[in-house]
Length: 227
Image 1 (cartoon, rainbow, N blue to C red):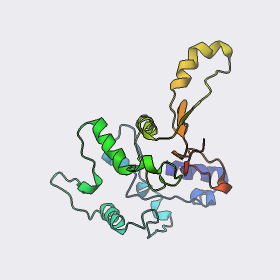
Image 2 (cartoon, one colour):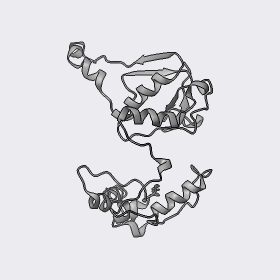
Image 3 (cartoon, rainbow, N blue to C red):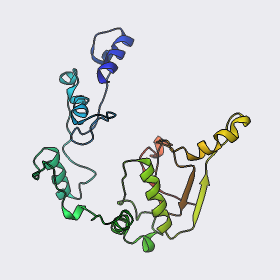
Image 4 (cartoon, rainbow, N blue to C red):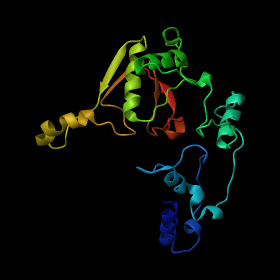
């Protein structure tokens, strides 16, 4: 895709200069998330990486050397670097074994999730009045369906009064309302909240869109709800 982007800019600018002479900045850590290839295998993910692009050698590389997000936990920073650099020990199955301190033992899904929440939000009943209690706590999931399930469980354990917001489910043409109303209520696209969104005072939320760049209300920012 990067090569296609390069050709597009060259065509638009009518020149053979890389990216049509435009300044293009790419950011990321190639030791972490690989490109997603639908139904692909390991070699497919690797071959789609920017490192395998035909123009990789023409790019100027700048490297960051300090982990700002985890700078207060140098042991974890070193652990991540060892994994990324291929220096961490592997087992007989060519896999990296995570330390026991990073793992929640699995018994059943319900029990293990309760254990996970107890570790991450251990004092939720006593600290819910503090709008900053969740600043350093988060549960990450791979799919939207899982996120909604986890949110439903967590919001139920939060001690404050719940307020539910309901999205619009009206069609442009009134005659289509009965046909598409259920569909609109069950849509769960990426970047949008669920049809029914339940919040509580000081409950942690994450912005899914850029609302106000000047005030720092950007995609991915953690906030707390004020009902």
